[in-house]
Amino acid sequence: MDNAIKYTPQGGDICVAAVLGTSQVQVSMTDTGPGIPEPERQRIFERFAQVQSDSAARRRGFGLGLAFCKLAIEAHGGVIWVEPGPGGVGSRFTFTLPLNTA
Image 1 (cartoon, rainbow, N blue to C red):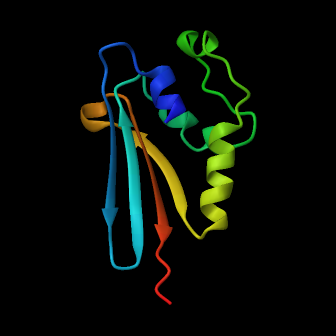
Image 2: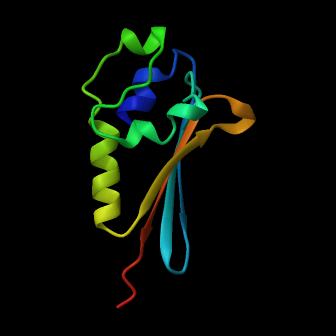
């Protein structure tokens, strides 16, 4: 959520959605920010990774947030990924977590 707020321009949109399935829940966050270039989409989940762009340089962080998200989600048996938002605008981050059916 922090990245969506940080990178979505004023007047842009952020949408959070969840879909409950029989064995998992899928949560997605879509924004209308600059998006993540295709070559960077897997790398951004690595520790200290940051997207290289002029706008990103003004909003520097440590490159740990998405790495921590990935670790937490995978520790609970889930998966996380990023893809372009609808119409190729912005980004859609999605993760799944299994449901405890016991």
